[in-house]
Length: 195
Image (cartoon, rainbow, N blue to C red; front, side):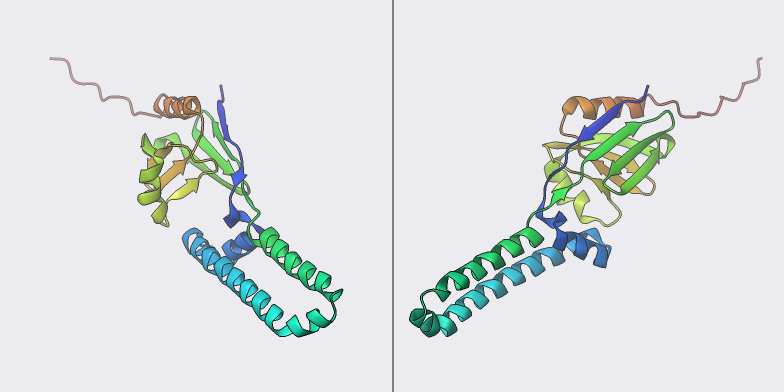
């Protein structure tokens, strides 16, 4: 049997066109997130200053030609909509978890990771707060999160922690049970001599 658990996609501005471009350019999840916040804030401030400066410089011309004001305000509105569409509208891809007989297969968008059961040292449920305060900060943490609930699964492996967020508690429990009961090759005990 191959149980499958899914977490649907969710709204996330850092997955907008601008956010994905920054993520591709930096190829570092944490750096891309910080750079996205700086760039989107800078673009919003530049847009705001441009609007004020445009009005201050063009006010005499627009006052003498009232029909041009419609074009001015339409241009300002279009620039705000364009910034919003390119920098704020994005969706984090859905997470799919598939339990095979030998490994746990995690997929999120174009990313995938296969974790053999024998490589999992421990599986536990941690709070989303612990994830944000501790595990999310490290570059070696492999994150598969879309919809974030109060608890997430933490898989401890030799390569580093793997965090999987499943919104349904029954799905989390089913994945944990599958990992704990997986058939891992355990060496046969050495027979002891009979006395």
